[in-house]
Image (cartoon, rainbow, N blue to C red):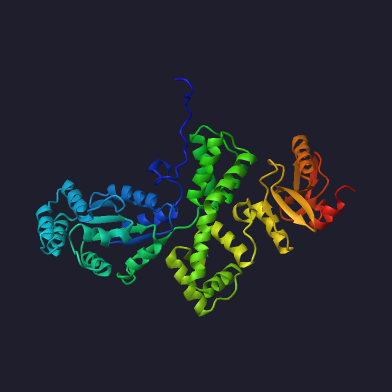
Length: 463
């Protein structure tokens, strides 16, 4: 057909839950679950993380693990899709040979629902089996139960209390999660701390780069370790952000500094209004919350009031407990808040830059200069900054051995763009040290021979 051509489908998934064959990382969470399952069947487990952190994907992995146990009946209930959860559970139980349909009909006619649960537990005990109900978006359960025609006039906490009562002492276990963290945590309050909670965080660098390389390979594109690490760090090792950036790069059809920059820019445009809404909500809660975040970021001692404020931010899904302290769930939001705390306009190089670019950006911020991600230089520069009235473009290179190289093509491109934009071109090399060079040409650069002060490098330009 004219004008129609086929391209391979993008291997990156960010619209839906990640399918089993594309599930990466979370090995610690899976090992924790399997270890618990090995020694006991009774379980109350909650997965906590904001939207798009892989909760549903992890729940599905748990579901697959449970399906492999002969004495377990696993039922996955996605409350975004299932509008009559009790009917759904009864229908799934029937598939496993447990017929509770008459008990359910009696409950709908105004009968006692506890008869259904009593009959269920008797059958489970008789057959030496266990029921695991996996509720996705658990905070929606009370409203759906009321809409189903059961407990029509009961408040949320009474409905949760009922489900709690018929899990205690019986062969019924719950695994729950939800993207609305505050309502989810309120739901757990009814259980009085009986739930084990898994707080999901970002991937490790190793797992993130493995994910990126594998997905690009599935799409027929090869990516270097260097570029995979740049994407992972730029995305804050966040699984959704990695999928988002990877898709943008895949659509552009090539992997290079230009397409990675473009994907960073799209991610920043996507995140900016989300982060701003977080910030507005925190500010409405009171100045003590900004103060507590500032102390957390600056690693200062926390008062009791600070800890209470941070604990409330855990319930919002912004922070998570980590090694007896608190940590940001989203590293990119932490970078955003670092700028807010320092009364600086959030600069893209700090928010979504590669680690080497962030080192240079933070150096500039400490000197009182405001760095920006350079969109307009077509790859010649990573950072734009104005220093003492001079427009400066900085190309950032990193090295593990103290030596970096500029090719003929790179040096020509840097000088051409610098002339066109009337910028002073500076090469920043990041390794165990940070050094600046103003002599831009194809050559080997030894980090020890550079300037420690960018102002000196600028003054040396053109000599």
